[in-house]
Length: 170
Length: 69
Image 1 (cartoon, rainbow over the protein chains, first blue to last red):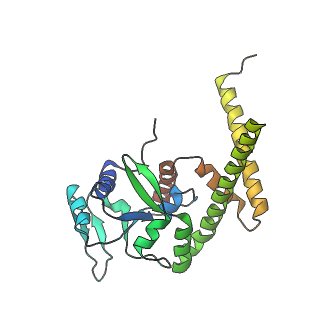
Image 2: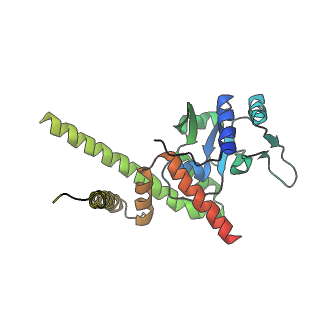
Image 3: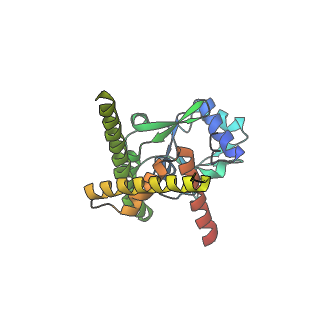
C-alpha cells in the first residue's frame, strides 16, 4: 500500500489542478532537495512557474477556489485560498538559467497519474550558492554532502548489480 | 529453535543498520571533507520514497516554528 502523501486534501487539490491544466512549473528549494534525499527541514514548498500570467495558471487556481495575489509594495506575489499557505511562489532562481533551460535539469516523481517536476539537487545547490543568504550558507554544506551521498549510493548500487551479474555469468 | 517475529525483525534491522554504516563509511573515506552525519541521514532518506522524505522535512520544519512561536 502506498504511503499517504504529506499534503492536506486542499493542498493536494491545488497541485493536481496545476498538473491537470498543464501549467508549467517545478518544485524548487529545500522541499525539492528533501524529496531527493537531503536531510533538511522546510516549512513550505517552493514552486517556480514559467509564466505567472499564463491563463492556465489562473484557471487552475479558480478550479479549486484559490487565487493569485499580485505583488504589492510590501508583499511578494502569493497564492491565496485553502491549502495555498504551503506553497510559495518563486519568481527567479539566482545563478540559474531560464525556466525552459532548467526543465532539462529536472527529475520527475509520480503524483497519481501525473508527473511532478523537481529541480535536480545539483541545480538547487547552485542556486543556493549564488543567492548566498545567511540561511543558504547554513544549508549549502548539507546539500553538498547529500549530493555526495546520493552519488555514492548510486555507484554502490551499480557495483552491487555488476557483482551480481558477474556471479550469475560465472 | 524457531526465531520469533520480533527477533527476526531485529536481526533484519541490525543487518540494514550495518549495511548503511558500511556504505556511509565508504563515502566518508572517499570524501573526507563531508560531515558523516549528513551522509548517514541522506542514505537513510534515500531508502524512503520521495513523499515520505518530504513528510519528514515538513513536519520537522513546522514543529520547529511552532516551538519557536
